[in-house]
Length: 362
Image (cartoon, one colour):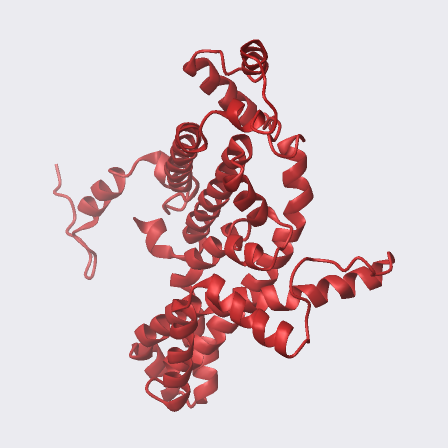
């Protein structure tokens, strides 16, 4: 029997251990090239965060059912406050609304109705709640969506330049202005805007979304709505944009001392190119969640602004329902506002998987 030949020069003697290390990987985690599969990891990641979102939605449904029963009081008292009714009539109304059922049965009916979009009828408006939401949602999306886009663009642009020129007059002036506006109560700032631009200067209408005298054609209505939209959007943007300014400024400051920016400068790139092509794309990563939260708050982010300017959206509907109080409407809007934020956060978590390699490696 001959001995095995010695290994050739330069051959690694660690091959068996490397093979054993490779064999320890599960076949389900690697593909034919020995690379780790992405789909299995993404499935677990998605299941984890989708499960958390589902639990949050269930907690929202649970809390909305009990909280507004404590706040709104007895619905029969609200329905009969304008006219006296007999005890028999009260009992009949209670049975018609299902309030004579056990609490667990009411809760089950509420969950089933919410999941099937059967949100019930408003006590105040005597109309299906779903129709009220569909009718007022476009006004809210128009106001909040326009203001949110302006706030994000303005905040990110100013935040990028402020962080890149830290300590400059531009940085100090814009940061101070943004923080003052961010700290100002929305209703107070809205009243100041109304006094200056509507009362004293007479440039814009005070409240509402349309003027009764506007012709019914499309362009006349569009111009009139845009005219009424200026002051609410100005107020909303002024209050919100500073948050995006400070986040973007902080992200730029974290990137300024990075080695890859020094390398880019050493290649002879101009300062603007270094900022736009290298610093900004990396600084945008921490702001992903913030942007998606902004998208989630488009539905519920302008409650105070809508109230100040009498804008006929969901925010005004919510406030009016508090004063009535209209428990079914409050429950439906609370679930809508909360679920929009939860789903926006879930979308941000999913996007993180694709744009941040550190999450895929974890």
